[in-house]
Image (cartoon, rainbow, N blue to C red; front, side, top):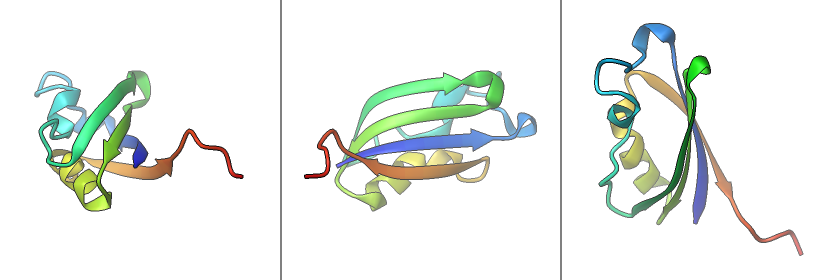
Amino acid sequence: MLFLIAQEHTPELCPKGNGGSKSLYDEKAEGVKVRGVYGAFSEHLIYYIVEANGLGAVHKFLDPGWTRCTATITPVSEEAIP
C-alpha cells in the first residue's frame, strides 16, 4: 500500500545543522520502501511517498521524528475509483 506523508516541524525544532531531514525518519524501518522524499524546506515541511505493509510500519518509519514533528499520513493509490 502507498502512503503520502506530510511531516512538519517548527523552526525551533528544525533539524538543519543537527542531522538534517534524514534524522526525522528511519530509512531502514522494516516493511517500508521509500519511493520519494521532497522538501518544502522554507515551510519546514517534508513529503514522503512510501510503500508499506501497513500503518504500524509507517509509524516505525516516522519514529525518529515523533518528538519534533507532526505527520499527516494518507493512503494513496494510482487506481481510479471504478
